[in-house]
Image (cartoon, rainbow over all chains, first blue to last red):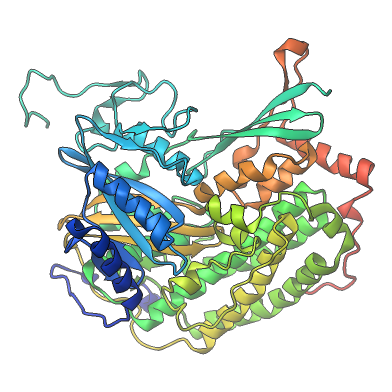
Length: 195
Length: 408
């Protein structure tokens, strides 16, 4: 019975092992071929990660919207799973997970500068995008054009404006949850002052 | 014309990522509008994960949900294993599957009990929760915990099964099979339950797809989506099972799907025990994971859990995004409540199997224009639903006859 327990420290090694897996990805290849044929600027930017997963590089808004419209109307990507916000330094990234009837998940990425993170709300196409998009507004400070009015989510009503906790520069250590204020180290102190 | 009444139901409850407040507007008995308010207890787990190592994150992720904890930790471990290029041993895959099915069994038994309680069939509630204890005892023996099992680790599992434990699971499965057979008969053939549950909380096949419903909710609307079948993980590519669907598209269908899934789970648990491969239970796993990103799906008892993990070459993740099944089903709930009666609201909300107590406070507030305010808590609303059906429809689930013999 005592041998059932695994020593965690002994399991950890420093060199990752990478293995190749041989699989059938013909359906994914067909989709990628059709999409790149229609939008030549996507050539070489779509990756088939594994069966059922296609990943794009981050696209500018105009490109993102036309590719998304094509995927929905021509390639039957009707199911919206979620949108994932990411902090890419000077930009905010938005990763939309959509899937088609063959259950192939397409991770279509959009990028907008942090200075002006305007993107289009997809609530009119996918009603279930509502809460995920509200989350982008609260946690990342994205501006969703066309998002239906409603309560904020998920941050409390008395959350201080201009604080976007999922951005990398926002440090929870500086937030006082009694007074609901964010007190970073004195701004006159140039960067690198955090201890 | 009946006066309009607005009823906020919820929101506080500390156990789920998404406690909810339903603000329901009534016209007489009918719900004309439902607004779902979420976000009352956001715990900031995703931000917390970014500043901790992968092993520390595993313990945070496991606590996203008390009931689906194994599903979340499986999804997270699979994400890390994919990023690191580590393949888990077959025995570990089978143990993961076994625990996942035990989790499904206990979650569905819990749901059946809660559902029965909401319609005033408390005897069934006692039966199912007694049976659920059997499963929790097994999980406690196998993993050391009743919930938050801690059996998963990146690269495999942390505890092995021995012959004594296998015999114990087999014995419990034999007993549970008898009970589940009875629940199946009850769900499929009992006229009182059918009268109470059918036709309420309608969600058509098209709406289930459009609103992104997942798990038993979508399968009860005839959508054969089960991540275990469409995107197999752990040992699900090997273990045979049937994806249960139903075309009732209502609460009755959701009950049928869950009861039949319990039968499948028992078969799968037996298959796992019969075909448990020998060998190691964990592969070596690196401390640092190369940069990459992965989107993983796992079928939790309540539906599809999705995890997104982005690594940056260090021992901490760059981004972790978790979407639990309930979060996907809220959109459908609003649609299901609208047009139904107040007496059906408790069972409709319960039928998506949310972390249920998040709706345990409710207040009826009359339109301020009409003057009087009236308060009603969740218990009163439940009692209202039971009494209304007894009086208006003559449906009283507590009259359902129970089997004479004790199974164990």
